[in-house]
Length: 215
Image (cartoon, rainbow, N blue to C red; front, side, top):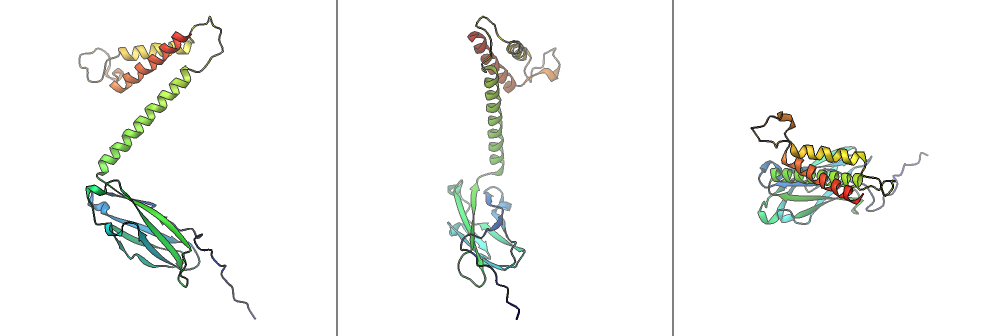
């Protein structure tokens, strides 16, 4: 007599849940973002039923908040933001997707997805670019500080290294070059530096001066 193949028992809450994306961002000035789609994947050999919960259900409309996913299939869950107001900008809400077997009530797994309403997509992009530039400048400053302030094996009577002197000359030359926007200049346009580039050169020159004074 052939024995019936039994499916191994699943532990409650330990089943991985595959959802994309894991973060929803709504922009107040872009109505096309007021409707977002979550995709729930079922890579398993058995069917799953799901349920979508939310910490602030009055702010969202979830189409098909409960349903089933066939084995090795996926389902799209549409989420609409229906309370786009300035008082909700930056507030982080959470959605929780719970999955279970169709014949069971206990939740085998759960996944949280955060949702945020922002005022403008352009403002957010400009903010991210500005933060990126600040981080790059900070990284450059730390690099120069580590390079110039690194202890060297030299006697007390020795002067500054050739590298330090060379960097100092380069910075002085950079500060003497014309700034972008100056029309009356005999220097080629590609040698014109921006204000930010000159600020970096002045900062590095200050560090070099400190190193020379210490030697």
